Image (cartoon, rainbow, N blue to C red):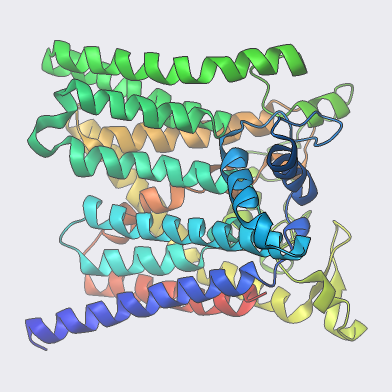
Length: 448
């Protein structure tokens, strides 16, 4: 096959996967009721209060009122734009769901763009990263219901794309105007969700470390400037939250208050075991005694058991559906697809581990040189530690504390390093076959 044929084949495959990603998200936008998602009604109440009354909600009106306001203000703006032409609330919800689906598509586009930036000469990696981003359960789920998590994940990945694509060109990392842009971008992230402290903190630390390694005052100045701009933008919100909810830094006021007096220690060996029963029943609370089991199942399947159409499921004959621990009924057909997905994902998980190890060794070999790889490692390590903290800070095990959607950006960020770990044909055939099989199963399972 000559170069032109390979190029056209590549374009055809990329276009096909992009169309699949769009089709999945738009279809689900009009078939997935936003009230079915995590805290769906609370997110909608937040948006509606902003749209109708022009103010932030109280905890009595929405128990996610402590969430940062940027995403909700954005969706409230859409609410107000379409409401004059919408005759029913359903029309407004459909519009918001469509906007969410387009945000989900932006995450897929950024995942592909990042793969091209991080592994510029590896078309196999570009294509596999796109396939994975298009059908990853967390990506599909966040595209289907209204939540601020999606905007945060877009922002974290977008920050890396912006920095690497433009920052290293003509040494813009040293320009004050580029630092102002990064500071404003970082401030917007902090106004989307508190988890943004991880990438913003990693970015500032990276600049400061670069100033030491290269003896550059300009990098030091830019790092401080980014921190000052981002902090200044976020401070008014935290003053408001301190005044309204009692503390500026808590991650989950509602859950902390609800379970403040409970004391149920994490299971023994929680961080050192893996429960293979997850391959038989891939839902909570199978594997709940193992951190990595839960993380694996929630990354590559629907561990929470909520990504389906409850109205349709109730119409199924009783022998075609099953009830899981969260009292949800799901189709047995979907449960079978999810089991197969976890098996197909084994080579993917292995590739991710190899890619992370290779990235870490590269940073060590270069003695923590001021490179994009160091920043990627700081962001990814920080996100993982943040998830660990979110799990261990509670005095009890609760399925809502361990969700891959909290750190979903970790998957597309590491994808180029996982898929480009080796150019060996056998490695590519195994990984490519597993990825395509996984994508087919995910499409069948999550076409709501």
